[in-house]
Image (cartoon, rainbow, N blue to C red; front, side, top):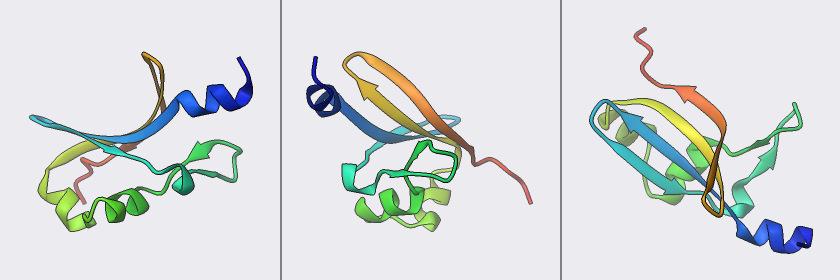
Amino acid sequence: MSQLMKNLKETYAYVIEGNEMKKTFSVCRNDIIENADGEIDCPLDAVLSKHHLTFGDLNGLSPTRALFVKYEGEQETVLNEISLNINL
């Protein structure tokens, strides 16, 4: 399979999980970046903005973590995990 065809089958999303909920937000390919460590990443604030949400809206969901996920066919790979249940 060509690299182009492989890339077309890949999709990305942020999965926001809480104690009693799970929401998935699709990620636009244009928002995906390569970070300083050479890893594929996507700013969470960009995804929230595209879905007309703010960090305040996110906080209202009482999330415990955000997962940046790559889907390739039936395979799901977590690329990054952000813990969101930090008490300051």
